[in-house]
Amino acid sequence: MGIQAAIERKIHILEVYGDSALVIYQLRGEWETRDSKLVRYHKYVSKLIENFDEICFNHLPREENQMADALATLAAMFKVGTDVKIQPIMINLRECPAHCSSVEEEIDGKPWYHDIMRGFNRSSENS
Image 1 (cartoon, rainbow, N blue to C red):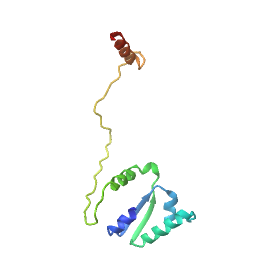
Image 2: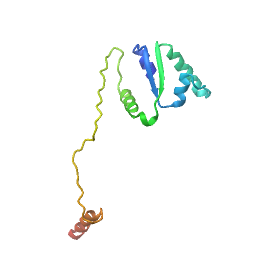
Image 3: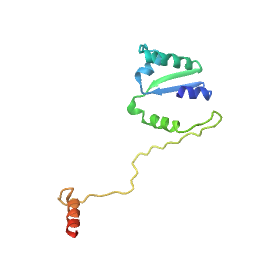
Image 4: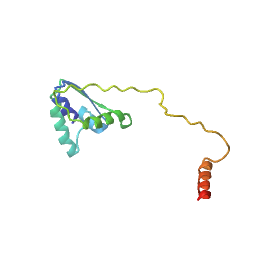
C-alpha cells in the first residue's frame, strides 16, 4: 500500500522498510518465492517497482519498528489528495523521562499494604 501511495505522489526514489524478513528478502531477490499466496503478491509488487528509478528494500526487526508502526497507523487515519503538500512531523526524543510529581518512600519498617489496611480498619470502625 505504501508503494502505491509513493507512485501516486510521483516519487521516483524510494526506500522501503518492512519487518517481515521473508517478504523483504524475496523482494530483494535473495530468497525464492514459493508460497502460492506470496507468488501473486511478489508479481504485483514487482510490477509496481517498475515505476521507480531507484528502490531498495530494508529489513527492520519488529522490536525496532515501533515508530514505523505508529506512523503507519497515523497515516491510515487521514485521506490526503495528491495535490496536498504534507508537512513533516518533528519528533523530539527526550534523554530523560518527564515527571509530573515524584514520590519519595519513607522507610518505616512496615509492609507496603500497612496504610491500606489501616484505612480499611478505620472505615469499618466508623460504620
